[in-house]
Amino acid sequence: MRSASDLTARARIRDAALARFGTDGIAGTSVRAVAADAGVSPALVVHHFGSKEGLRQACDDYVLDSIRSGGEAATEALGEILQAATPVRRYLARALLDDTPAAGALFAEIVERTEAWLATGEEEGWVHESADARARAVTYVSWLLAPLVLGDHVGRLLGGDPAETATAVRGARAGLEMLTHGLFADDRWLAAFTAIGERTRP
Amino acid sequence: MRSASDLTARARIRDAALARFGTDGIAGTSVRAVAADAGVSPALVVHHFGSKEGLRQACDDYVLDSIRSGGEAATEALGEILQAATPVRRYLARALLDDTPAAGALFAEIVERTEAWLATGEEEGWVHESADARARAVTYVSWLLAPLVLGDHVGRLLGGDPAETATAVRGARAGLEMLTHGLFADDRWLAAFTAIGERTRP
DNA sequence: CTGATTATTGAACAGTTGTTCAGTCGCTGT
DNA sequence: ACAGCGACTGAACAACTGTTCAATAATCAG
Image 1 (cartoon, rainbow over the protein chains, first blue to last red):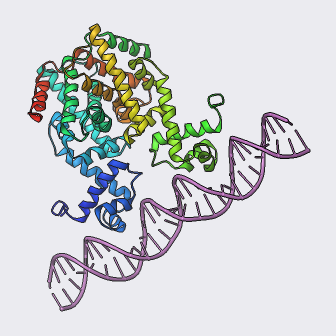
Image 2: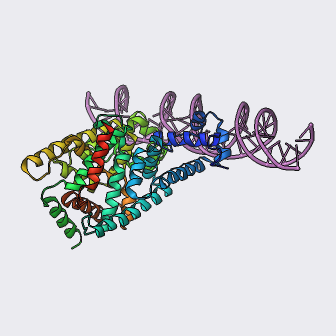
Image 3: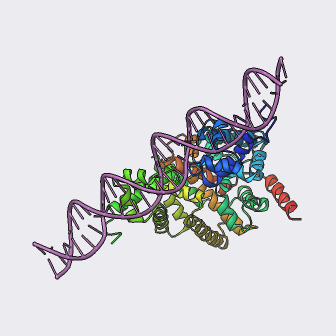
């Protein structure tokens, strides 16, 4: 019933909320603004979603479903995210920063998948071994999401439109370069940081 | 005059705003809440800062000064940021997402410094060469800031308190590992992405 | 067609928002 | 002592907030 008629006012409200929440933040968006964007009355928003919080949860669910149904492998999921519609990206970034339960679950889920994926890579020999597989997976995922959250700044400095696919690809390629050939030619920084780690837990 | 008496009500208001803005977002924070945290009347905060926007700009300036005066080299600046007081970190993350002019300037500034720093490294031989130095610098900086913006999620999955220094060090070490030895043992992903880049601009 | 269920609205509510203003307090220079 | 000045406040303002509710329009089963 829901997915059958997804061009209804309900869907329009959700899309409007997604865009506005992503642009202005959840707290910075009024129900009236969402209603105006969707071309309906504020009362209809409440009728369909119960409350503003309900509307936010509906956005959470929609974004989660969009991403989960996107790709199976973690890397493909990343590609989907990067090329997904901009409103979804922006909303996801907001949700991650606002520490929405759904966003937290999604982050944990991606980390889980990534850790398994990297473990497979280790077994098959195309991923280097790590001293701390968990921390590596978490850091890797946070790096994947970084251009998503900081998209505006990254895009601005890379010249093109932040929403432009070419800009995202350019940044991602530079990242893969670092992840493949490494950035530092010797281990001076790694050694220094390892020393700090030892000093923290003597 | 300002720095002379930095324990005044004005400073207390700024600190309270920094914390509240970082936690609840700027739009989600009321002047009354800031005033209550600082133990003053709402009228006093507008007396000192003109408006809520003025208060936000004062926070911007304060954070920028804190970071700029921190370290000279980019890496040291990073260390300062990571170990800086949590409210400043949170506020900076919010400002980056809200696309504050000051935050944009700071991001550009860090990228500039980092690009120069990496160029020096290339000359001195401890940084690998890159096909796109600019994109690499931008991506590298966004990776540096990622755990800052996603601090809550990262910290949660790394077990410890997100504000705990040890947790941040653990994640940073895993990152340096990837940047030193690389993550991928062969260039299958890099080749694939380079192909995508070529396909985007034929 | 009738009846019932759903979609949709306008008006209104109580509370919160940022901001204003007249006025009080405490200090400092003369 | 007294005038001046900045820190500081309580009360109030208009605008906006999320939400409620009765009433209307549309849809659909029988």
